[in-house]
Amino acid sequence: MKLIQRFKYYGVGFILGAGLVYALFGQRTDISCNYFPNARVLSHLRQGTVEYSDSAACKIECMELDSTAMAGFWWYGDVDFRASDPRREPFGRYSIEHADLAIHVLVENRDSISFVLDITGNNVKECDCP
Image (cartoon, rainbow, N blue to C red):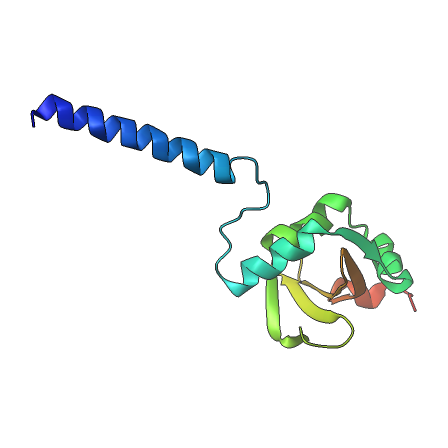
């Protein structure tokens, strides 16, 4: 078999394989490369809508945090698995800390909702929230 023929066979096989992969996985948007536990938890919490308890909403207003700062928790936060309880019934709880803001957020992972229960940190002590 000549060298040019080998390249033709390789090219045909490569194109067929690439077409098959695209047909099977091309339309999926839920594929992610989150292999570590911290990234998996944050990715899962980002997918749902975010709701706040009355206490958490009061503390956010008092600390003058905007939606961009709160979005930083879902992208750049660190999950403290020692303070978290992921197997809690009926919903798992995660403690997420943001080093730049020096704030900890307690999040309850509901079915399609990330429910922020409480916010603690250095600046929160000045607030008069329940």
